[in-house]
Image (cartoon, rainbow, N blue to C red; front, top):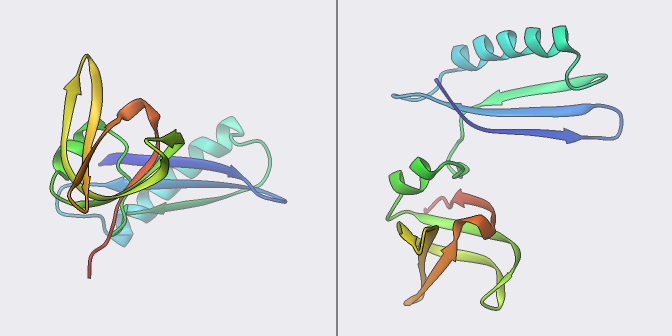
Length: 135
């Protein structure tokens, strides 16, 4: 089982803890329930987050987040949606094909092509990256 991504968000009256898990062959509902029970017990013992919370455990889904380097390598050739921390090359959001994930001057770099233009996006500037489901 792999933890793909985790989010902890403060809502009005409680926390939302969201986990995305994956495994070879895909995640089942039983997998999500098992992980939910295990993680819920740990969160309760350590009172993390402080106060009431909702715990969501699911598969990454069709618009899966790309978080780890191995995700960017595995999904080369796929359509992606990238959100930057700040404006980069005049844009804050990019959509296109993830052509490659390479090292340029010791900086991990996403190569994204959109309408024939290639963008070389430093990984450290990426706030969020997801696969983009294609019909």
